[in-house]
Every structure is written in structure tokens, then in C-alpha cells.
Length: 127
Image 1 (tube, rainbow, N blue to C red):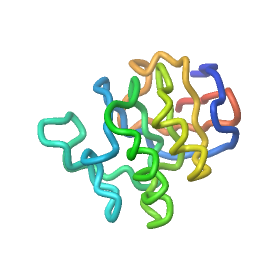
Image 2: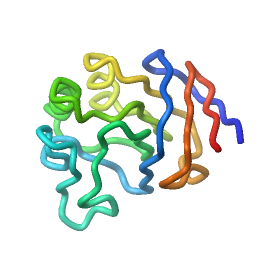
Image 3: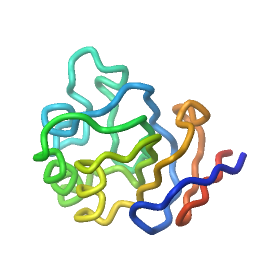
């Protein structure tokens, strides 16, 4: 399956999808030391984002979430790429400063956890 979106942060990546239909808040939602989702009750609670293609509708929460994304990258536990339905400013800025490829304007319900996903600029290929 091929999908196109809008490249918010240019780049390419390939990995296994970690997908949620719930928004993700990075500050307090993901442990920046381990990459594990720690938000209680979140659909991805206990999952690790490291090296995954992280797929979710949009971000939520504090502007410090941008720095949390940067810390994930600095600690080697960031997602390989981010795919959103609607890229919010906090997630986008975090992806920019962490050099994580990011695409939005995508129907995220089409990408399920476990699918192998490749992105290059605005093209997404799902196996």
C-alpha cells in the first residue's frame, strides 16, 4: 500500500509501526530515558517507541514535549519516524530539533501496529 502525506521534516526511515488512534503527549507520556510509553491508560502504555515508526493522530500537552522528543533522540530511544493525521506544533518542533522524519495529512487508521513501514519525504509504503 502506498500513501502520500505532507513532509513536515524531510528524511527517510524504515521500521515496524507502533500505532495508536489516541493522541500522544510526550511530556509525562513517554519516558525520555527508555522510550517507553508511561501514560496510564494510554493504548500504547508499556510499549517502547525506540526505532519504531510512531503513528498517531496528533500530539497533545505541554510545549516541553518538544524537548522530550529531543531527549529521546539524544538517549538513542526515539522513533525512527513520526506519522500523524494532523501534525501539531509541539511534535513538529520536537521532530525538527531531533532530526526525526515526520509526515502528516495521513489516514493513520490505515497503518496498524506491526506493519513494516518505509517513508521517504512525503511517500509512505506499507508492507
